[in-house]
Length: 398
Image (cartoon, rainbow, N blue to C red; front, top):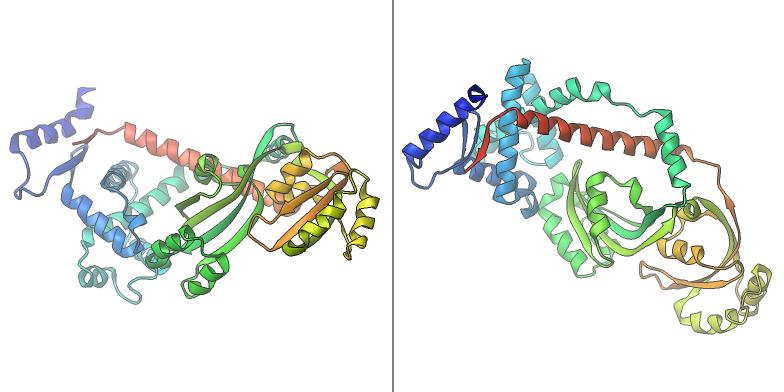
C-alpha cells in the first residue's frame, strides 16, 4: 500500500521543504500522484474559460476550476495505463468542434487564437486532450454496456399510471447557445426584471437565443441535474444558468403542483369558455349560477353571455399544472375558473364532464422515455467511472 502513495508523498514532502516556487505569487494548489497543479494553472484555466465562454457563469470559482484540472490530470494518467493516445488529427478535430460551438477564433489556428488573446496555449491543449481522452474511455468502458430495454420502458409507463404523486410545472425556458455567452449575463438580467419572452427573443435573435413557455411539464422527464434544482426551486424563482449540451438553460417557474400520476395520464372530457379578462366578472356571475348543473347547463350559460363553449377531450398531462391540480380536486359538473399563468389577458371557465383511463402511449413519448433513461444511465455510469478512477490515485488539495 505504501508504494501506491509514494510518488505523491515525495512531491508533497518536497513542497513542504522548498516552500513556494521560484516566484512568491505561485503556489501549489493540488497534487495528483507526481503532478503538481499550481495557482498559475488555475489562473490560466479561469482566464481561458472566461474568454471562450464569455460569461462570468462559465468561469466558476477557483474550487471548481481546480477540480476540473484534477480530473484532467487523472484522465491523462489513466490514458497512459490504458494505452490511449491522442493523435494530432483528433486534437485538431476536437479544437474545430469546440471553437465552432463557441463561435470564437473563426478561421484561426489554436496557436494564433491563444497568442492574440493572451491565453496559455498548453492549458487549452490540455483541456482539449482531456475531452478526447474522456470520450475514448467512455466509448470503451461505458457506451457498449448501456442499452434501454422494452421492459424498462414498460416499467416507466406503468409507474406513470400509479397513484404516486408527480411534480408538474409551468415555466418559461430560455436557451442561450455557447457561442452567445457574451449575452448570457444580459439575458439573466432581463428575466430578473420581468422582461417578456417575446422581447427577449426579439432582442437576442441574432445570437441564437431560443425561448419557450412550457405548461404541464412533468419533473420526471428532466435530466437528473435539472430535476434536482427544479425540485428545490420556488414559484417565481429564476433557475440557472444550468450548463447543458451546447449552451445554458434558464428557467422561470410560474406554477408548481403535485398531481396523482394516474390522473395525469387520464383522458378528460370537458367544456371550456375563454373570455377577455375585462369581461370575466360579468361572465362569472352567470357561470356561478350553474352550480353543478352539469355540462349542458354550462353550455347554455355560455350562450346566454354571448359566447360559445368549446368541447375538449385531452390528456390531463397536456394541460397547465394549475388546471391539472384544479381538475383533480373538482367534482363532475363543477365550474372552475383559471387565469393564464403566463400573464395572458384571458380567463377560462372549465367544467369536467367525464374521465377515462388512457391506454395510448404516443410514439414520441416512448422515444422521449428511452432518451431520458439512456441519459440517466450514461450520467450515472460516467460518474461512477470517474469516481473509481480517482480512487486509484493520490490526490491532495493544498
